[in-house]
Image 1 (cartoon, rainbow, N blue to C red):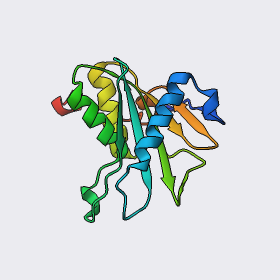
Image 2 (spheres, helix red, strand yellow):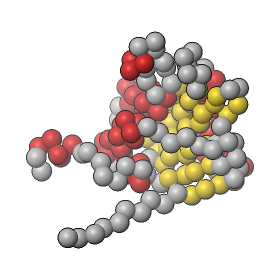
Image 3 (cartoon, rainbow, N blue to C red):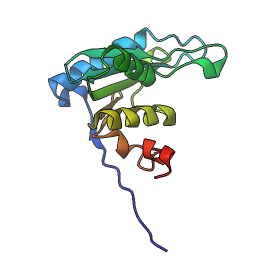
Image 4 (cartoon, rainbow, N blue to C red):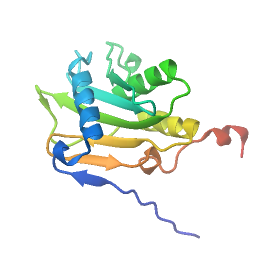
Length: 162
């Protein structure tokens, strides 16, 4: 038997003011996106903003449907739109924020497993890490790569039996 450990590094901040100007701007864009969320059933609004290598910012928000599985998370809306509009431009960073009961949450909410897989595949596609900025009003967490959030991930080589 061999025992191994997986360690994830998370940088925590208490205020958006501690972030770089570029990161602050991305958080602002994510918050704007959350306000336009279509979430009439859960009232849980999520906004995402993706920063591309060409400095374009793409917003996305969660889109609900009365047939719940038919909806889509903010992160995937933003990533899929970025990939469709700029298919050859790598993603540098994504900011994610959440709002419910009329207020943005104090602590950040991480992406679901499906979004983590899509973000990770996007990293692999462009061979470049994507910085995750998970933003709450009283705590911000930054993770330097999606692989930090999903270390035992399914990758394309597995389809070939490698």
